[in-house]
Image (cartoon, rainbow, N blue to C red):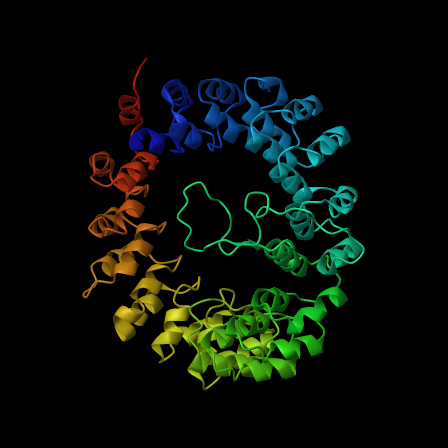
Length: 505
């Protein structure tokens, strides 16, 4: 891979005439970057597509090619991309439905808006993976028909399709009203009874770990039930009965549904598996009483996920923040807090409450400034990236709290070039700060030069427009390919240098 040319292909300041020259020497990797250029013209796209078919697929998805530009017999993958974007021609679908390459028929089956005769062809395809792919994306009418398909793999796909009618999904859960499945992927290739060894060493084996069949296609049936329970179109009353099912995976799938009755939630809240309880904790279906029960759960992940529930009461959330590692993130309940709640949290004697509200980036100036002067470093760390803070306020934060807040101060969108230079020279140094400075719009050349000394910040700094052109040119020969590509992407790379880097044919 030529990382310099790949970088140039993505360089926003590459002139159109140099784009033409790059197209003339493009390989698949370069073409992929060129295909994402915002200024690539239709004429350039056509030339690129003719040169590199892999790039043509990306161009089709990007809307840069039309049906008139494509020969489906010669460029079937490009034709498939246009069909996927509903920009192809119906006759292409009929041609591709008979393509000898199974993977192409699978991709076709995933396309929406196909002619009915093509859908019927795919529904009777000789390869069951094609039929299953169709079942996953097809219309309610065809999904209903395929729910009775003799192959269990097709039924599993129907169960995952959100367009499948609710009554059909309920029937798939219980198999009531449907003829028994006759095949599955396991008994298609193995004598039953068979259980796939999780440590299977056969290189040609693609059966899922633990797949099994004793004649009842049990592992595929289990997967089908899991898909149906996760499907929001499946009726609530059809899934509620699985609350006490011996299968952990089925109970776990149930815990994520947002339409559960309170009695089902209550049973899941005492499930023996913490993963089930954790998914339930984040579920907006649980009521206030159950939230308070889960807030005392012995498992840390359950409590952490509860903090992300959009309906968690603020008093519960504050207690959770005091005793649980939630991370530096804006929680949904904090994002929706009313002005009165914002003020109450900001004035709380509990630093955890102040830290939570400090994650907002739309605080009134008076509250923002009060939090910026907080005595607790964790609160200051949370408020430091808030827009509107002055250089003086940001410097005071660093003076008071040192390395604890340096990286977050560097992330403030209003940090000045001078402040960023000082942060880059801070002793002791803070590695995360170098990355923040390297991507900051106000970073100056001296600050960026300091960032180049840090291995993780180096490729970020290499693409910054404020980097001096001679330094950018030096980085084009760096030992790390990420740095080379970043330097070639840099919009401040002189056009004359760009021109010299692209071979002439």
